[in-house]
Image (cartoon, rainbow over all chains, first blue to last red; front, side):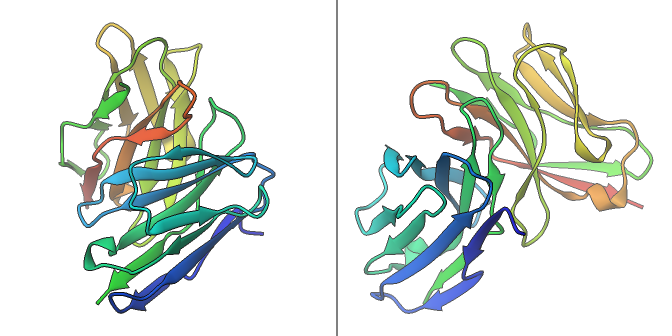
Amino acid sequence: DTAVSQTPKYLVTQMGNDKSIKCEQNLGHDTMYWYKQDSKKFLKIMFSYNNKELIINETVPNRFSPKSPDKAHLNLHINSLELGDSAVYFCASSPRINTEAFFGQGTRLTVV
Amino acid sequence: AQSVAQPEDQVNVAEGNPLTVKCTYSVSGNPYLFWYVQYPNRGLQFLLKYITGDNLVKGSYGFEAEFNKSQTSFHLKKPSALVSDSALYFCAVRDRGNTDKLIFGTGTRLQVFP
């Protein structure tokens, strides 16, 4: 009965590969997000979707492509992985503009 | 542009003592402010929020925060710290434009010593 779930939890891959991270929320929220946490623990938004429509794309390289098949899912596909993509990626969702966001457990991506 | 600042990278406090984790904000209009906690190798957990109303907001695990409009601050407090409170704490503000994103501070590591 996890509210926001991401898979996989850990991902180790070689440079140049393509990988996907999946996210699902069972809270009935309209808005979903992807955040990136770097090695210094800074959190920065990457994308936001509202009812399957892209709202935010924060100057993320176009190697990163979010996909929202329905409002309960927001997957993140990354092409041609680079060393600098190593980070923890968090999915989150929220019901309305003035409410808190609920976060998944994170996916630790390591590019070698 | 909306932003929050957490001036302390780390706060150390003895168990049983009161703790304060500082946050200041810069917004246009009325702010929507939040505190989150991150335990090692875990996601972010919501602690509390200020939207409107009473300036003193109570949240999870005995934490509270005081909204101070004149000082543009939203400091997190707890009367008596526990060792288990040791974690990374993030202040955040909602961007109330059409982007609706949460903008996070740089985080403050709280270390509670027994």
